[in-house]
Length: 145
Image (cartoon, rainbow, N blue to C red; front, side, top):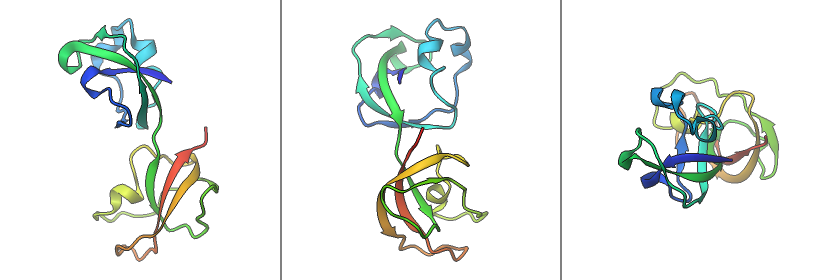
């Protein structure tokens, strides 16, 4: 998928979360090739940077370039026991209302309820202590679209 990003941010392997278009984007002639292809709240990774530059009033330097993006892998701490690389599952967020140092991994940005995922790496048992008493596994996942 192709989108536009500020020239200073356009680097391969950069991950970003799309929080939605700026007000100025609504009337931009590049809107359809820029923000319309992205889903709000999703995490993306730049996999290729193109050379063509366009003017854009909302980015530093007022310049954007086309980049090819894909959904970024996400690291997740999960109490699921059937963890092995290559397995697929439908994501159900962990039931946790604790504010702890691991929350961003138990409930990561970019991952939503009912997302279909595949485990691309099992990173073993989480060594930290969960305030809710869960025994957590550390996995890296990708999306099945």
